[in-house]
Amino acid sequence: MRVPLRAVAVVLCASVALAGRSAAAQDDGEWKVSLLPYAWLAGIHGQIGLAGSTADVNLGLSDIFDQIDISVNAAFEARRGRWLGRLDATYIALSAREPIGGGVSGDLVFELERSTLQPEIGYRVLVTRWGGIDATVGGRYWAPHMHVTADAAGGSTEIASGNRSWWDGIGGLRLRAEPVPKWHLFAASDVGAGGSKLTWQASGGVGYDVGSCCSVVAVYRHLDVEYNHAGFVNDTYVSGPGFGIDIRF
Image (cartoon, rainbow, N blue to C red; front, side, top):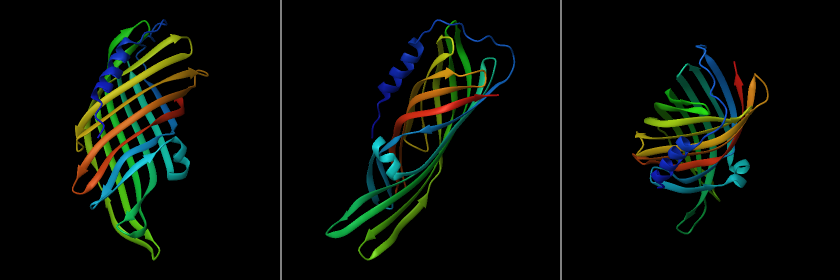
């Protein structure tokens, strides 16, 4: 399992160190609400398994259109003064194959559907002329479903099928900086545990205001989890670029 906690610390420290030149937006006491639907072109790597059968998954960006069936993602944020609430939701469905081995021709087929919900509340702990830093706490809810079949010469045979769901508590930092008008930089990182042994993520990107209504956003995001309980293995990380439109209401 990859446990690069030092990488998380580096991201957090880099977030604190980032600086810009423009003034932070003044608090007018009004609610600021935004919705960000985005496409996450992420590869998935690690190990998945069920009922004693496991497979190494190594899907890079070049594989996502072949082996990732669907990916749907959106983030909602409401902010007032220094307080904020945020909900990020992702859904991904993919399949992977491993040779059966043992002198048997054919493949084990692993199909994985995974939904995550990440509710957070936060408080802006630092306000400067270039932007600000939010401290956040919340949770990450995982709901994977796995289906394992044997695809051999005699046809397809179901081996196992199962669901798991669990919560992890998380805490992190979020940064937003506005170095020049219309452009903004952002970075975020969190770490936690609970149902899983460890989960962490880090992201960073840039946005450009195309008008008062919305911004176009580009981001790179890495999400990692280590879960192994009662024969259900989900020891994976999802990593890659994302693109979306941040719509303000």
